[in-house]
Image 1 (cartoon, rainbow, N blue to C red):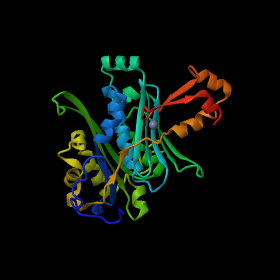
Image 2 (image 1 turned 120 degrees about the horizontal axis):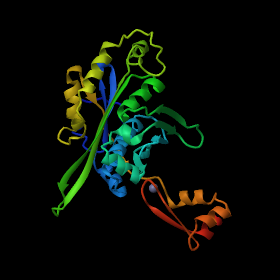
Image 3 (image 1 turned 45 degrees about the vertical axis):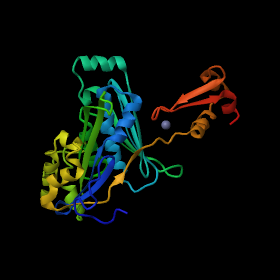
Image 4 (image 1 turned 180 degrees about the vertical axis):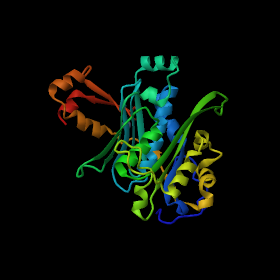
Length: 329
Ligand SMILES: [Zn+2]
């Protein structure tokens, strides 16, 4: 489906919630870019997250769709942070071929304190902890998990570290999210979110060129390797770094215009876009399956007036079961 590269614009403009794979032959770069709008607003509106939490989760969702849609697999790809800051958990997962869901957990009191003190950078909100990327291909395969420390950097920098250390692929990731204020059809004030991002990876045919690029400076660096970054990758990285956060989210620019601005001199081509949707994988049956593994004591402790209610953290759907129904499952 996505085998044939195309000139920019051949597929028209991808628009929101569609990941655009691209290739820059002149620089041996492959990547993906996306702008998300409706999908993001549905997820964020469902939870009504405060602005700083929404922004962080939006970036995590962009990262998840950029990587998730690049994997040739059947299963689930999850981006998760676990940390000691006011926002102690972000989870976004991508279920092949196209479903996305996400939620954040935060401490209201600590978040309000952080906001009042102006401590709202991603590193201040997340605190110390880890970013874990997990690929789970189902019952018959061992999940693969890569973990990198959240050592005081932005999500885009941490994602770059992940690829450098775990995948040994020189990678640059850019992520952005922005809140817009406008009015709905009836003239009422409305806030909406947009987010966007881009991942660029250096994948030359000769692997030794990869090893010389961008792999220095990581935790495993012994410091004595000479700095000899490949010229093509140095140029690609520099170009990607010129992207403003605004350009990642501006619907007037869109993914194709951004790619054109960055790479047209080097012959950028795009592939068919990959649509993503807000869709949760929970179901009444699945949750009942989890509850049926509870002991009689656990069921007794969870029930109120003979019923157990469970709310999905991702999509906020509430399921209600009779205690007897679960015990006899
Ligand atoms: Zn759900």
